[in-house]
Image 1 (cartoon, rainbow, N blue to C red):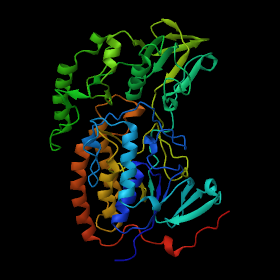
Image 2: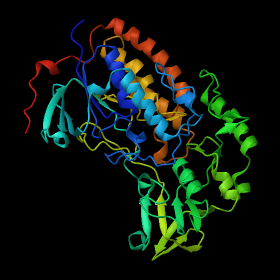
Image 3: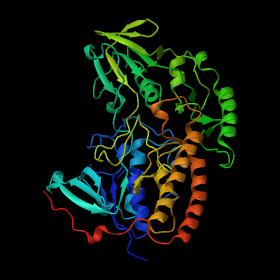
Image 4: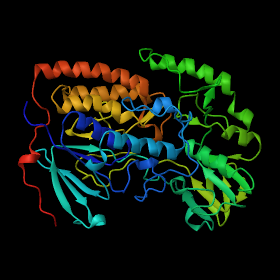
Amino acid sequence: MSALPKCCIIGAGCSGFTTAKALQDRGIEFDCFEMSDVVGGNWAYKNKNGMSACYESLHIDTSKLRMSFEDFPIPPDFPDFPHHSQIFDYFNDYVDHFGLRDKISFNTAVTHVTRDDAGLWHVTIDRSATGGPSSETRLYDAVFVCNGHHWDPRWPEYEGMGEFTGVQMHAHSYLTPFEPTDMRGKRIVIVGMGNSAMDISSELSQRPIAQKLFVAARRGVWVMPKYINGQVADKGAMPAWIPLSVQRAIAKRMIKRLVGNMEDYGLPKPDHEPLEAHPSVSGEFLTRVGCGDITAKPNIKRFDGNVVEFEDASREEIDVVIYATGYNVSFPFMDETVIKVENNHVPLYKRIFSPEVPNLFFMALAQPLPTLVNFAEQQMKLVGRYLTGDYALPDKTTMEQVIKDDEDMYTGHFYKSARHTMQLDFNKYVWDMEREIKRGAKRAARNPGLPVPARAAQSTNVAAE
């Protein structure tokens, strides 16, 4: 076999270091660049790169069994829903167990990525944080984008927002009830009803922290429990061969029976059925609403000084507004000619490949249920084979049709929203990937050879500026 391609990995969060491990297993040369001084990405509390959305009280909403790596099981003494510090330790143990730490370039920011006419990647890095050059360009045969998608806050726009006299912040900046701003005795509005909104509102609503706490949202949501009949709710899974429409129909009936009507708790009635939106999971939020510690409001209509007016014409004096309104999918280092993001949508074959760029891989750029932690580990089963010539992609027309069919299957039942552009079912995805690997192996047997030629090693790197 000819020489294997040289790869660049951007980011050392859970998708970056599992990608590195998979490449290492196959003897594929790589560089992994991490702009921070630690691994863990979003799960590194107070990460110096400023991109972590982790707050001090955060526990993962996925049970430990569903987030465990296949080749490095999670410690059995971990609780069902580990604290962020335990997840961070688990990630670091993984990196050290597989000897990856010395292969990660820390304090190294990727500032620009572009592709030349020959298909080679020019990756510009900044190593000035450790005394290196501020601009150095290296060449690669393939690039793995592992920068995550929970770091670029998505802000709404409201009339008078710029004249609000109180504190406005995104949930991404929230750390504790006292940091970055002291919430004690404050009148607070949290905008949104996703997982972060429910966690933060449940914490701040407990007296004597907030004087008043409101949750404002455009629509009602279904709040899912963490436990069902004493078992973690995501423990059981129907066989992946059962059509998703059938799985959803069964799950809808179960959710309605177990949780009941949201309006009975004092929440707005959802305008959709269960599982027609990304689930909001909380073991505490409904109790806090039922206790009167949290008051539901419709969406904000406008600001008037320190007064917030809601769409039902009610008005409240407010001190702090926290926007738990999600994130933008963005790649600030990527040349605009390479990939285009429209309203958080990036059409990808099997959530990995752009049909136009066969040597660029987007890792964990998805919103899988129930887990994202070990998603790239599954994706690398296919990508690793691709790089060694044991898997071949179908033609561009077929890829484009499969992208459409997969998006219809995974997201067609959701209401239209930027948060629903990357949804998929983890179990179904893994089952489908196993079949896709077999199909791709047959294609590769008909046309042997490496799909990504190794040319970077023979090229001269651009000199540091």
